[in-house]
Image (tube, one colour):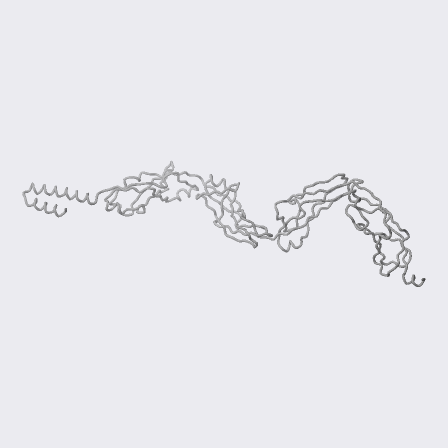
Length: 422
């Protein structure tokens, strides 16, 4: 095509002047047509291009914070020769918003500059765009760091102390966000743990209800929190309930029932070894004629130093049965009385064959008493041959007492002397 145009121009130039002039004009027009046909001017649009914010210190130096309301991404178009435009990509442009140029209405002009071929292209759409900001004063606060645990330790173990370093953290950000931050949390996984745990964890800002607060506009003076969680052994401790005072005349304490009968406590091994039971506060039954019921709150009981409860259920239900006293006469034979500590092998003769006893206690208990339950005994320790008045001892029984005379007269005879007399 170009060769044909050149030959035509040569022929025309060999003619007269008017033809020569006409040929030049035609040649230029035809050349322009050829060029624009093979490398035409075209337009290309780049969409969703991120706008880079520069000189943000212009706002932070005023102790203010900004949030982009619009203009963080834009679209723009360029125009130029196809051979140039086809080579251009998004990354060949600097798209910036200079915050030092912010207007009184918080608008910042967006500038688009080509990194290459700047003289060969024209930006035809986009340079008139603006970024709009919301400006807010900054605030700095200090809040506690709270360590929370996830999961449960191994059976027989519980969470002891939890410490964080630092235990307070400074937070800076827009007032609208910072005002809702009441605590910073770190979460430690203790599932099946039986040893102490140490970890460096990322802090999470939370409101008063523990809800997470996230924002790229706040900064913390510590991005990692060192957490130490002590894992302690637990121990089952029996409970003990005592009463003070005396029920009304004619009444006595029956059974003392309480649930649970034991609690779990935790602490260092050396401290747990020193603890075998837990005495609950005594319950006053003075003058009572009926059942006494009381709930004891374990959280209000002073535990030994370095010992703490290892269970969430802290209520102990106590029921003390106050029953009316009853009396019963019971006669036992001297043959029912056992002789103990008869080291000299004396012959023992009782001056009476029957001993009358009086029992006092709960009616339900007295009615079922048998002589074998009382197990009457006399003790000959230290006694010489001859007559003696000795006490008859009985087994202690719940809710039953032996009253009245408990002594008998006996005659101890030396078996050797007895044989000589014979």
